[in-house]
Length: 123
Image (cartoon, rainbow, N blue to C red; front, side, top):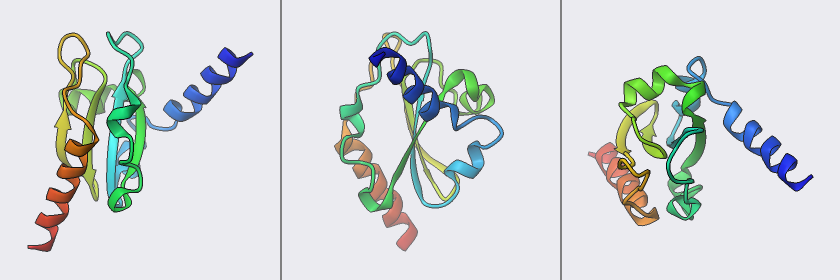
């Protein structure tokens, strides 16, 4: 029963974003996009984004690569999980997993990138 509830939660969380509605989801403020795949080498480590949601009003959305193949191709993601930072619909930064599915970042890196984007917006 627990496993079924987890799968339902994941399908709801991941099923919300696809090629058709991606632009709408990333347009309007700071958004970190977490892209995963069914066949990825490593599970996504949620500690990477711990404390990022709400930081400078940042939102986090999850995308399954299978649901947004055009977006994944445009972002040039080949290994998963990978992340992208968008501000008002414009891609500002990407963090791509290596061949083993490892992401060499933490929440400080993401927060630093958010601060950099917002500093650009001032000048």
